[in-house]
Image 1 (spheres, helix red, strand yellow):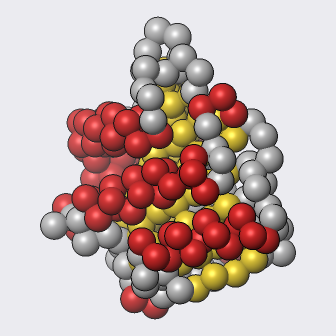
Image 2: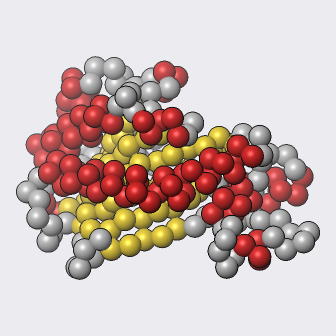
Length: 248
């Protein structure tokens, strides 16, 4: 069972393979790849080419839990939104990474980096930046500034990046994305929309110890789990949950 799903309204596991060279865009290659993906995951039936040239194949979003895979200029992306279990997301992402070298001619020499990330979405109808500041700035040097009498927080989206090894090849990134603008704060009219917390483990290629994309994915997922459970949930997710609940 996916224990992370109980912490938020929507949870996802995604992977992004970044290439130094342009990704294949020819009709035959693209269709052959996505047909292979569809063969592995038959419920992925929704295919489109978007206006920016991105190709997307996904399951029905209305089901609430769905797989997706996309290919754009220099990235191969895949993910599972609200997976029943983390292992289901792993099975999907690893299969896509296994297929990439054979169907898209993607190899280590052209790879820039591989990202594996968790994201947590919290639906909230109100000033996103204000509630994030209340959750994360309380007790910090920014608390006083964020509580100036008559003031309203318009932007508070903390980001932190860290190297996890001596040569900075393995990195993590925490980011909080809000979706409130000044017009909404001025009028007091807030639509219900998600506050997103992203936590990413990035492995730069070239000096990494892993032979395959799947080997690296498995290590990154292990590191991701460790850091999310030790730091992100108690220090970011739980305070944000409490701040949102106190306003509803």
